[in-house]
Length: 330
Length: 296
Image 1 (cartoon, each protein chain N blue to C red):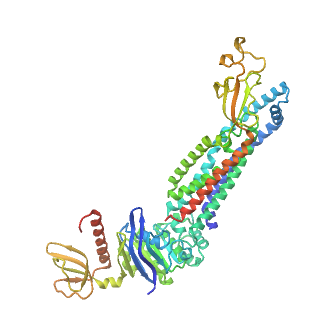
Image 2 (image 1 turned 45 degrees about the horizontal axis):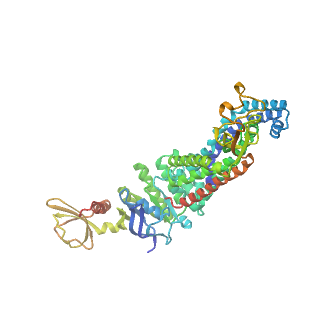
Image 3 (image 1 turned 90 degrees about the vertical axis):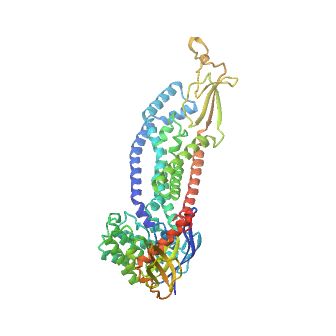
């Protein structure tokens, strides 16, 4: 059975590994150059200094400029990274959906299920082999992108906690990949042709991923709220702590919202046009403050674990259902 | 007598429609049996239940006295060639033989290789690039290498040209003579069966209409031609299977239970094909009349 599994899927495995190598050819050189720049410019010390607030104003400015330059240089890589979000889905479509559906579509299930091994054993070996292989691929992919993105995620502007960036690194992609494969396999046991099974897996994956990302993830734990005065704020500090800001508003002391999705800062001694108080033309009264709802950056791995766990659990359930269904297909 | 395949009131339902219903059948050991019926009569469903691919919804099917569904051990005693002889098209014939060895405890790889060599099949070409007839031969070799007690073939020759069909059936007959397996072969090509089979099962509209050794069918059925017949009893006739009438003349295909001595009738021995067709037609009319809600 193991021989058969290898013989049937070796070509596909080879293509998958070639794809991983191609990905590595993109990730490794850019990752190394990013890390080189990051170290050369001393950005880590900069970042620590900015976060702790113990830099002199000049040093602080130099640091901010260096970080900006770094982000300008490499920030576009995140767009390439976002393209990688579809990789778990592709693995699910091409590894999962045909596993059973191609057999039933071509009638070969009637050949292999009438040999001297039980269907349960056939399904277990297939699921274990394909699940194990895609798990290995997903681990390499997830940890590889984490390594790749790490400097950009610690350069003061982007947070790895943000939607999109969260989804492409760490252990969450492992959960997505296993889930996509399991969904594909299961769809193939319900729809006995490859294309419909792929279509269903595609739709199911997209719907669940988007729903969980938009609806569930921000509420996994109660978000924290922080407020700080507009006046005396030394300017946007960027994202030094890796927080995931869910909502930000500028409010007057009575709690009324002046502006949403923005942050206002009036450094000490700065006045608005015409000598008015800073922010007065926006309608800000004295004592106005910024209000932010956020998930703190140190919850990143907790959220990753929860999300990976949810998807791995779903994958196990789908694999189980698929193996059960295989015994009823004729 | 020992029965290799037995079914008892066997039924299988797809949704609300019975593909096979009340099917009772006993196939004696050592026979080469034809399972005959029009498309959609339930032949494949019956074979799939016999090889454990499908679970019966009613009644029972037993192969060598055991229920095949979910019985992996029994599978090694059943050779099966599915419709359109499905094979992994990117595998070579040699790889398929290896696969059989990995998936079966009892596997006569030498037998399969010898057969394929005798047929002059290339061992190292993907079977998807072989002709339909060659693929059918590969599928047959794989089924035979299990050294099965019961060999089930689902329309193995339906898609083959006449020459390939004859070669396939010859190969089948030769190997059956060697191994002594009992064969049940479904087909709707009647002409081939007369040469190859010594037992016939007629399945029509999901039920068994007729089952028996071909020589018995030949002696127990007669075609009568005579003046128009109004349905009264005829001496020596057990049942009229099919009757067709013109204004003045009737042609009957009858099952006999004694000699027909009435000089009114011209008696002929029908061919196996005629007999089978008579049973198929009978089944057809009965089914369609009841489905349309009119009297037959």
